[in-house]
Length: 190
Image 1 (tube, rainbow, N blue to C red):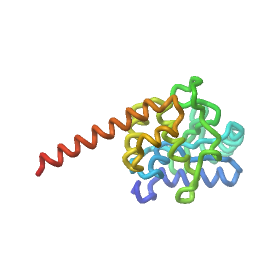
Image 2: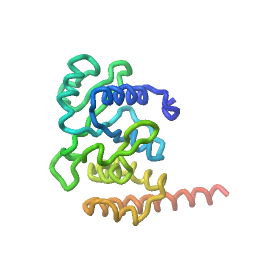
Image 3: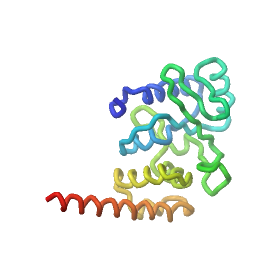
Image 4: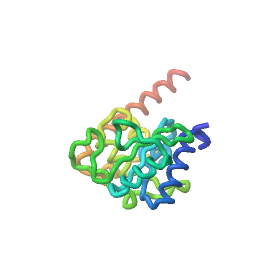
């Protein structure tokens, strides 16, 4: 169900983006759903949206109207009520990972997005940069998978912010290690 786009997560993404469009909220799909849009198939239980800071009052208003539910203790986390799926908003100007100021802030969603399958999705370069800047295990795994799915190499790494190039190169090396492991496994079977 997930990969045919009929599951609750895809339904929630469609419902939320329709509300965003109706209320003039600029957005870009980020996180795991963006990873899928950029050719690496993996499941996720939630949706992440990159938005502008000036959209937060409208989000709070929509939550007060019951269009979606707020999550106590998490000011940028909501639940789409028809599906029960959680979604987080990443706010332009804030920072990935720990949230502490760093060299790569969340950018304006319209400046770094493209339309894929009728959704505004964060572009591949920005997705990779933000995942590396977040410095989480799953994000590094996603980057390795995006490298493989999009046949990225050192030239792509040179387009990234200098602060994440070293981590990108580590992900390239990990992809090579995984490819070698698969080659060994294949030769052992023959």
